[in-house]
Image 1 (tube, helix red, strand yellow):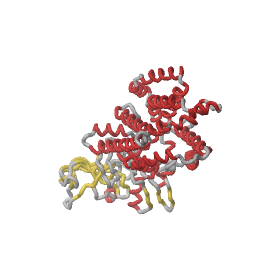
Image 2: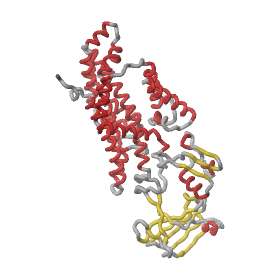
Image 3: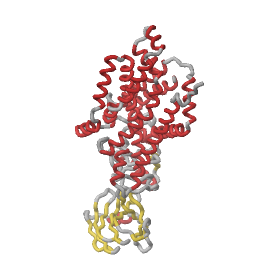
Length: 507
């Protein structure tokens, strides 16, 4: 356990140091997943680091305990339940992938080679402006555009994550190529028929900048077309009829259209409006939602958020449940009587109405939702611990501790709580499952996270609103179902492994 404690202390200290230096190092960003706004003292990351330091220090200072044969026997039972053991391994693997963060999913490049220098944008908290790579703007660099530009000019190299999209405010324009036949007509390669719709061409050395926008009818250019220069300024308008130019108007004073026309790419592309079906060429492996966000990036960020919220939720619920339940069960009397009446009154409050009231008053972040959910989720655990503590306080070891002068808090936390630990371990998976289901339901109903935040419930709602794009609904449903099934299998295996009746033989 000392190695675990040292790991927690080291992780908390390194996370604070990297945040202070302005570095975004994967594996250590888990502490700041729930932060809302710039770094500050009263942020969830500060509380999580403090909790990690306290727990790590306690584990390091705790004297080593001899091997527990009962714990070894329970672990052996758990491993014998293959369904639960394999589910635990899968959840640990998914959690490990979630810790890799922008090494796997993100719009910032992993590495950029430009003019003989190497840059690592994914490690920087402050974005690199585009003019540093010769893009001509001061905003954050669009690394997908930079990759296309450097690949066309051969002046450098950009290494992007496997999913080069962010889950927040990253909705790039999507397109697909259109086949041009030898006679000049355009063919839709997917439907294998003459193309009709809007198409465009680009500058080969500026892949993100349109050269001309066309309207196409039955494979021929037809209607109005617009021409642009490399800066995006409108410089010409054209009118086509069955592929022939009827009118050509110059909109800029003395524009040099001939050089612009020579720089026009001969390849036509079609603009795709979201939701877009899965496209491996564009690395939209699960497609996009109705806003143009990458679904796989949304699922990944949503899983990170759910896992971080589950950690805080479990901490709050277990702290309240253990404190109230053990106090009522051990002290009894008026404390037990008044405590039960208060819990009954509190549990009678309409949870959904309170959430609606909070949602109509403020825009709750993930921390507010976790606190509200935790405030209404600890009562069941307190009742279980109250009964278990009430039964344990009459044991001989409690009487012996009282005779030796041990305080009530020492008896509860050093003697009684370790003997009822099986209740907490059994409740843990189902507590996490309840949090994920509750957050998903609130987001689906519109009372959860604000728009723009990665949420499985919002993605599920988007899928039901866009049944013509089934990949949205299927992806969200599969992610939610798979996660809840794995957690349920783990919980059932733990409950079965800790069940004394199943593994007890009377002679």
